[in-house]
Length: 305
Ligand code: FDA
Image 1 (cartoon, helix red, strand yellow):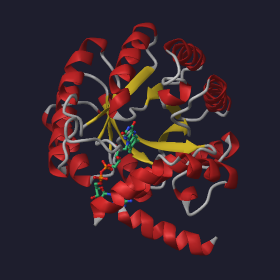
Image 2 (cartoon, rainbow, N blue to C red):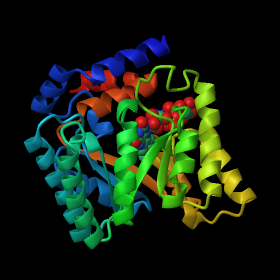
Image 3 (tube, protein in one colour):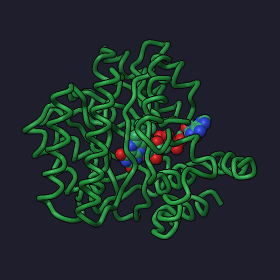
């Protein structure tokens, strides 16, 4: 049943008509629990509140699978606006983005132009940028672009997904770049040819790659709401004397907020991923796919609106 629901929401997440309707009618159905607002002003307000609680942030202007140049350039402009706001308002925040929103599916020239625009502005203002990892079909291209950019910028990182068989090898291939990586379980629907179908194997591989990347001496963001993985990380850093300055925990806005504050109080860097913008629909559907309890929350929200 859970798998059926997961597949259903992942299917809905890609529906273009629903995405357009969602944009037109604004944040609905409890999406505001997971999305900080539709404008940068609303996002700034949320980031400030999180910072006041001792939480660091990475902010994301929502948007993905953009298929025309004008829209890709507009998306990049929103990222520039977010970088400006972080610097102007002196927020403790990084930036996250998806390369399909910068023109990855349109042309190499366009995506590189937009990425360099963003990374130049971010570097000037001391803002770190993480390139989210999308579905498997974009993984190789994302890593190729990341490698090119990492040679030019020190303020860029990316994400690797524990559910992919290839990830262990990717960590080794990236090692010479000394990358700052966010490690996650993986949020897209992938076939068994490329990804572990069994959750237990994903969890085991997650632990394996956390250890591998940390012991390579590279900065590691462990992005999860899973206490078993968090505990594993705590034990690992204790065993190998890895300082708190070499890793952090990350969670999504609206998910386990009390746990986020608890980890910050324990002295760990805890970074919250804060999405905002009008293109909230695909992101929201993936959160519903992850956890049936989130669906119950949404159903309640629908009756309240
Ligand atoms: P999982 O969903 O397996 O949950 C494990 C356990 O966590 C649950 O059994 C429960 O105990 C606890 N839990 C989860 N939600 C809870 C809740 N609401 N309340 C209480 N307990 C809860 N993916 C991707 O493909 N590309 C990317 O770039 C990113 N980026 C990213 C950034 C950040 C900061 C995060 C946190 C996540 C991502 N992801 C991602 C998403 C990631 O791949 C994954 O889909 C989700 O984090 C869900 O997986 P978990 O590791 O949280 O465990």
